[in-house]
Amino acid sequence: MGEVDNNNSRALNFIENIIEEDVRQNKYEKPLHFRFPPEPNGYLHIGHAKSICLNFGLAEKYKGLCNLRFDDTNPTKEESHYVESIKKDIEWLGFKWYDKPYFASDYFEQLYKWAVKLIKEGKAYVDEQSQEEISQQRGVPTRPGIESPYRNRPVEENLNLFEKMKNGEVPDGSMILRAKIDMNSPNMHMRDPIMYRVLHATHHRTGDKWSIYPMYDFAHGQSDYIEGITHSLCTLEFEIHRPLYDWFLDQIAEGQRPRQIEFARLNLSYTVMSKRKLLELVEKNLVSGWDDPRMPTVSGLRRRGYTPESIKNFADRIGIAKRDNVIDFGLLEFSVREHLNIIAPRVFGVLNPVKLVLTNYPEDKTEELTLINNPEDPDAGERKIPFGRELYIERDDFMEDPPRKFFRLAPGREVRLKGAYIIKCEKVEKDPQGNITTIYCTYDPETKSGEGINRKVKATIHWVPLKQAVNAEVRLYDRLFLDEDPAGHKDKDFKEFINPDSLKIIKNCKLEPSLITAVPEEKFQFQRLGYFCVDKDSKPGQLIFNRTVPLRDGWSKKGR
RNA sequence: UGCCCGAUGGUGUAAUUGGCAACACGUCUGACUCUGAAUCAGAAGAGUCCAGGUUCGAACCCUGGUCGGGCAACCA
Image 1 (cartoon, rainbow, N blue to C red):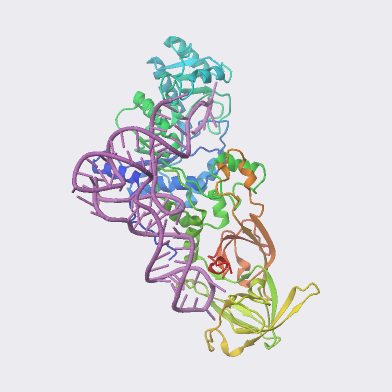
Image 2 (image 1 turned 30 degrees about the vertical axis):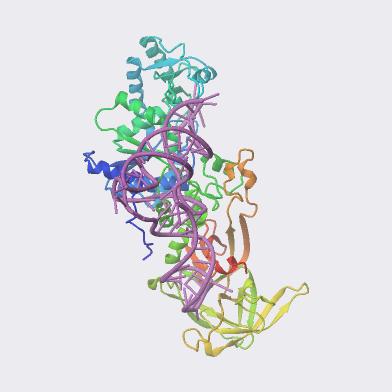
């Protein structure tokens, strides 16, 4: 139980096609080896989840391995608490990395040796120009660059200078180590790319041991190579780096080497996906944190009430390709509903309560009614709810002057209280402002659920016993941005599109008493309303629920 | 005046590698329903960016365009 039927027979994506071909050709002697290489400078988001599902999923599918490797070559941006959050998120998604977490920083020594090797072979040199000069000389994509005056200095001099850089004898920014490739290349990344920079910064793992740090391009491919990665999957923006990835491997690799394959990153409508922008939302307190339930982060989705299964099914459904894409946020919502429909126990919760009195129900009588916990899951069992003369129902479930298509309660109309009796509205009581304060009904004792006669009524509504109701705070979420592509406007900042109503807090909601013991991350379907998840801020006696997603609503959609 | 990618219903992904466009979401009907949910049945919606070419046959191959994305951090 609890499994969403997942289509394993779906067509292969282009990466799987490449892999199948590799397997057919017996290209690798060892198991296929993948890797997920996050930089520990932020929290994982749903786009990373796509990559995680791809890499770890491929390893599972082809009985291979998948490493978790932190790409920690920039000590000025990386922090160990990000390492912890990333590990937690991957584990929560249900994936297991091979062996232990790996770190690019573990390869600093090896990388350094390779750099020295390149210098000795005349393939790398120390440049002492300013950042501006170097950038100037690099040229522009449409014009070739020009060579640095330091480009042809003697090997011995390069060795000495690089040693000084390494020993921390030169200030930040004064020297860099460059690969000697081709300043005329149409590919900007091949115009003598930077291999090492001087950074007197404390690294989250190596501390102050190093004062030089390798650049991404001089670390990533080599790290893949060291770990025996067979397929190095990354997003499209690295496509243009591939010639450089291969060039560095050409210099150092023997035998089997990794192959880089690029795929399109995930874009989700009505949200932003860059770590920089997400960080900005956090730092400017536009959201409550990385795990704010409105954030597209893995931790945000978890807090919102998403399940790992729903995220994995989503990742599977969106596929892998190379063209730019924008996935409808509704597809993510479909994926949670699909899973939660199967696993979430049904309960009664009234968000906007109005008192209802059954005038012909005995004053002191209380019944224990039995309700099915989940019609989709026979093993979910039953529970009891007390029923009495006074109840709460949803204010929206009553209309004094209903339109013809409104099926619920109205004066003179009958409706079933789910799991209880059919009731009929007799009259309403209002306050001086005209707000309805109490709805008076009669119940039909002959129509008890499961026992009595089952007359057809147009609607069944949920309810909560007034006396035993549990108070709770409920947080309703809507999309964080009003624009489909908030980051896609050249002239406007993405923050201008923030939805002012993305969070609505409702206090004094009335829940059925069984919910009193609910604990954080527990998920329920509040019947007829949606799926809800207990928030981490929730405490006994002060329950807080997040609405993960409302139920599909075919009625209000039709325009009513 | 460059280089690298890409282009298939509203959205996303397929098409057994050249054999007559499929699946999912969404939308719309209808059935069922003690959740206006779920479930079930059905429908509409693309002729594959454009123009040529090769071929008995092209979404797949070739040529030339058009449009979109990326590339000029001592970021990854």
